[in-house]
Length: 180
Image (cartoon, rainbow, N blue to C red; front, side, top):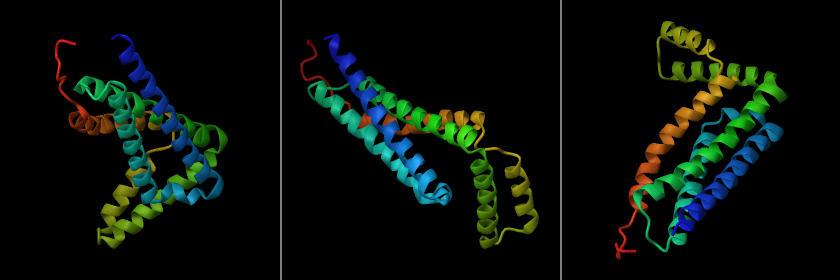
């Protein structure tokens, strides 16, 4: 009985590593092929969906390991481990690229994000004084600094945990034989 939680945790770690490699590969390919991809909204949605899908597959696999009976805690633990490891690897790759390998890219992307935000606000008909305030506020933030990326990791993990609670609710099952 004691080996089952270890095996589902090991499975979750493996899926977390797979997720991390996929996200790191995405980041690396964007860096190598076209850095403008870092500013595309659909890349964020694609990454989000990849995280959700891999985490759900991880929970489903763990449920199979447990013979189809899984508690809420087990489901959430597997989900959380998968997402935490995968996101951490992705964050570390981002820190490596934007702070060590190519800090100039971080500055370029920050500037490009400001431009895109100003254009978007203008399309919405936002008064120029409000746009200027928003641009000044955003210019003071360094989204690619190590501390900023680590904060984003923590907040992202918190957000993904809420989704994990829903996934755990869906995957939990009652033991039909509570004596075992």
